[in-house]
Image (cartoon, rainbow over all chains, first blue to last red; front, side, top):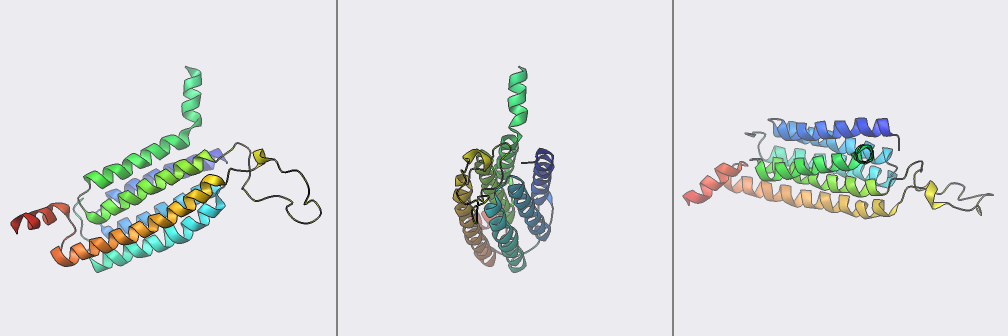
Length: 81
Length: 132
């Protein structure tokens, strides 16, 4: 594990996670959640868990984002918080 | 005192995992929109996965694929210290797949709620349920 990369990605994960919850648009939240999953995938790679990393990249960043975008298009983009 | 500080600094992965877990818990409890609650639930799940993968990390170890596993050097001694512990990874693979299944069910329920009440906001939903 290379700790400067690990620390940088950990801060990015927290920032993107908070951003996904703060943004006032559900489509934006879905896309930022995809970015969050991809940052997590990079984190697993840095920590040496390559099998978890490519499962997260395909299932977490790929399928989850598609589910979110599909659900947002079926419902509404409006949110109050 | 310096021992305590070095322990706290050395385990920063665990601090970030607790931070992410609390962010997810806050979103599940305090957010008003159903989709935001589901995002919070997923952040909570990935925080737990981060904890488990952090357990398996060793200093100076490489990824858990055997070096010289084939060919002429196939009979050399394998030291477990040289490889990251793969057991938490295998457990967390299942957790990721289960997490996506949970996400699908939760979003399907949210779509059903929207079809019936025409809103995703929790306070508007409660107001409509009370009117009936």
